[in-house]
Image (cartoon, rainbow, N blue to C red; front, side):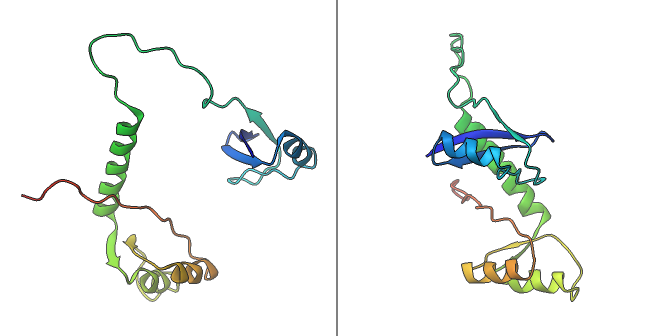
Length: 142
């Protein structure tokens, strides 16, 4: 299995997974590879940053911020935004999403939980949703 970084003519970047390079070339030649955002099949391979060696950080006595801590901070900010701007409907997420979709209640941002079966129902009804794991608060409460 090989993974290529790809970019469409509209500038959208995405990954493509292929059995090998020959399979990639064959699919590219037949225009079978399409951008997941705009569905354009004019795509090109772009250099992957995964295998590019970066320069070493100069020794300044301070420890550079790690990628892990930056991602953790981003996750916390997203979680805070969702908590402040979305109504928590708990396990009633699917019922509430269906009510909003069919105009029974006023549209609003909601968050909650759903089972895999409920998610199938939402997809079947054409309701878009995003699954976002909310990290638990590991800090002790005062």
